[in-house]
Image: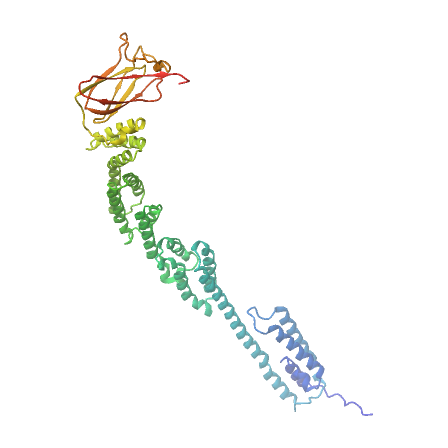
Length: 503
């Protein structure tokens, strides 16, 4: 039987050559000494590593897999050196050539590492670009929503842009962020582009807070981009609300004057307020003077609440408020006339009394007092309100009014002339039982033993409406009388108090 060839003499160069060839990860050291199974194991280990590492991932090869593979290579090199020490080379002419080839083949794993790092970098770039794309889609989706619903999405997208710039400043994604921020600003400000100025205020105010998240250097000119647009939106929205008589304009004008006091838009505030006051003043002579007076009262209060950092603006706004106030006071007369004609007598009384009190030197004060009296009479006798009273006084017919009541009374009358006066209570008089007044012989103010407070007035021919109202004591409900005055007669009015049935 043939015998196995004797082992070769020990050669350190062969050991080194086999070890170096095995470090390539391909088991080539085993190939030159014809150890096929160990070579297959090397190929299998390398294949497993490639399966784990590819495709390249931004996180790289798992650390445990890499450590195990390096340990395996070290063991393959040590085992190959042990085998090659006393085993002849089969495929290469000398150990020196094998060693040189082993050194050259070390370029294979080194090149693989370089290529893998490049692939890993590209995977990272793609991951960052994907993040950028997701942020872009979030901005686009938010732009189709109302700002209140979209704000959270805008904030998430902004955080993503900022993270790309801060954490990966040299990436392709980070270099695209400045352009994305321009689109971001334009998308958030979409209502402004549509000239929907009231809806644009909130998103533009939000954009002014963006520098708290993204650095000013990164934003550049975008830092001040919202300012003029916000000023325009505040002015336009407030001016429209002011013109329409809606609420909210004072808040927006206040923000404009406080935030952008020297802007061109702030310079338009006072002319807009003046125009609104002018319009309300003209409306006093229109179909609804009471609404105009109410509007002027509101403008007076609202305009005085506006800030005025610039002295000229503050002074002009103060004059506008003063004009609104004075016009409201004088316009109350037209309002009272409107209420009287409309049959709102109680409102007319209040309005005309206030007008007379607040305008002591107004040319219509005397007539306002007459209208207040007539309106009070008309509350008890509606027929008295058919005609607007004049300031006429006096007449040819004497009418004496006596007070057969323990209460002080006010006598109001209206007709061809209008007026009022008071009478003291009758000291010896008492209330009449309600049943007594139903007797056919009932004659108040006819007791010669009593001294009735009285007053005689002169009235013209025609119908005069009287109302007697208790000022003190027990009388609760006013009494009324309609007198048709004719020449040649003497007229007497008698006031008395009745009680009964719990009254």
